[in-house]
Length: 357
Ligand code: PHE
Image (cartoon, rainbow, N blue to C red; front, side, top):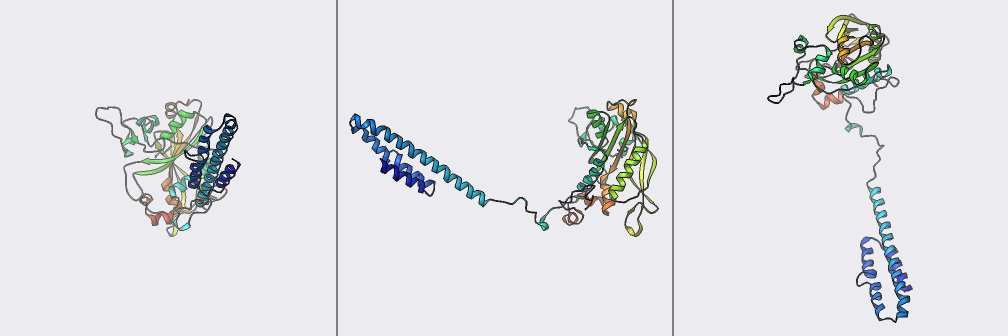
């Protein structure tokens, strides 16, 4: 029996693969295996002999079975190690520069804007691109008959036949996010809301889908002066200039009172834009003090809270900063355009590291 043990334990430990191991199992403990045959011989033994040989054979069988499964596990480990070594991949390797995609100017500018306002304590809010006419219009003090609805060239969603509720719309501006944020968080509040907006319009400076960033700041004592300072800080940081001059032009939006459109002083000398000097003015956004009715519609008490809101075209300020002449090209997915105007994936805009790399 000792010979049998030595023989099989030796063979098992030398087995090269699982197939060899299976052959050994059949040879030793299979139905017609050497150990099994020995067990059959027990019947021919005297009871005394059997009492010794029986347990010994069973123990040997157990020992061989556990040697088999230990070796099987070891072989599996080796196979797995080999596979892992073969499939090894260095995920820290930089991408191949020539095949790397680029960050779209819209994404880049959105990140830049977010970094600047985050530094002034604004967090980012979001809302749906398909919204009800309540959020897009009524809550913002734009009633059904208001000319602003027609001016905005709204895309209306389709309602099923017989469904007479007013249709949802593709949001025409990011202002509905003002309402949703106030409903969710109340006042005080300080948010920006960048995102896609839609209007039925198409020419060199208009596309049916474009991007805006909304700003909203409410507290007990926020005034137009705070609005002016925040916008000046933004424009200086965004255009990376030390000085800017802003012009607040009286305007009208149903959801702000008073309302102002904001222009920045610039020059177009030699065909390139310079911000902060020259005799031209460039309109960049609409703004104002949030209308008391809007606060009320969003569940904020206008006797307690006040503040400003603004809405700015992201595509527009991207075109201005990076000298991109035609808005439509933003959405053509032309690879040459994307390589030319795109940004490196590793060029994350931060205030301390430089916004535009
Ligand atoms: N929602 C306005 C627009 O799309 C911009 C705006 C936002 C104006 C907030 C004032 C306050 O034109």
